[in-house]
Length: 289
Image (tube, rainbow, N blue to C red; front, side, top):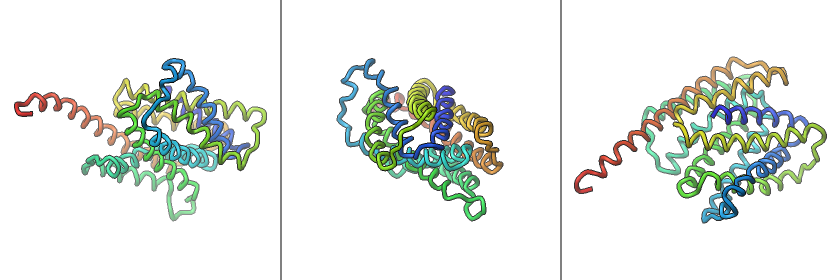
């Protein structure tokens, strides 16, 4: 998880560097294209059968929404202070909780709803609507988090029947044409070191997703979520030295509130999962069941 966090943090830096010369649509395309190349070894490992699926319509919907989320997220990285853009992206689990209720019919009780409300307070602290510091660009970052929450639910649904590597390879393949069409309207070939930034964005993004998937398979979400927040200090350090961005105290406070809310949600979900796992064999062994 720490490796995944570092990969994603460095990807954010490369996107910001590339955004100084390229349009967001192009950055998203190159991230998708080079990310796909980085994922191709999965085909060598599993063979072409990895591409066969009965869930292609779901993949297409998931990838269309994922592309929109990528556009919004990358645009926010290029137009907001990095710490603020990353902090707002942490609100995704809040929207995942809401989407799980509306989409999957999951039961969420008072304590988790309280954590969601607390998380939204953190978002408001960062965005600060109604003040002179408010930026409409922050709403784009929140939009990326909302769409990412919906995508996370779709991935959860796919994971019921699809192996993780198939989800990774088909997602990265479908992202390429979906991101290419908008990029063609603003096309401009990268020059010089910009090529390095877009290549690294793709490789780091795919590597981060692979490590993230592996981490979730090996450990509990409640233990891993705190590690993922190491992305913020990494981004803050690079943002300060590369772009002269100082960490705003309101962003730090809002990020801390969102972190606390996400930490509790992850802890509660893990506790409920352990409880369900421990009671299932017992109830199955009862007479008459």
